[in-house]
Length: 127
Image 1 (cartoon, rainbow, N blue to C red):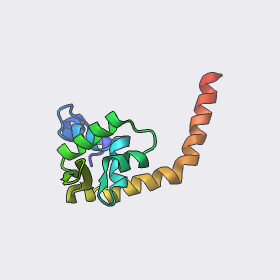
Image 2 (spheres, one colour; image 1 turned 60 degrees about the horizontal axis):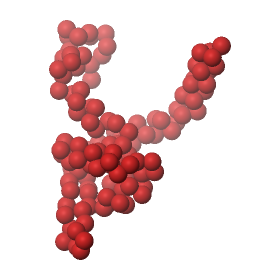
Image 3 (cartoon, rainbow, N blue to C red; image 1 turned 30 degrees about the vertical axis):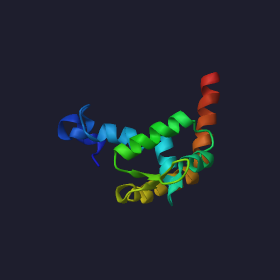
Image 4 (cartoon, helix red, strand yellow; image 1 turned 120 degrees about the vertical axis):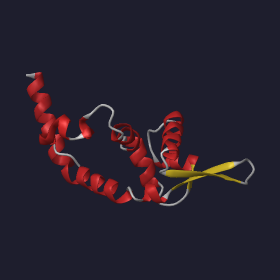
């Protein structure tokens, strides 16, 4: 990963047309990370929705489509009546489990300190 000191001229990651930007935008959002976390085994749409409190059907559908388009998950139509669909991680999606897990662990480990900073900031702003 580039260092901020390198600056825009030294590294394309700082450029608006860097190909990493839309990819990061599409896989590192809250719902994408949470969907991938619950896909430790193949799951149907409604099971994913039940596990992710607060996600709407529309947002979950968009998230699943985006992850499928990016090769992170596969969608398999089940020969049931009515027709069912199940989602699972691809090898590419599996490769994100470890870094996402580390990020999640970091948020848990630092939640108290972050919340303390948020309270201090909010109190300062209100003064």
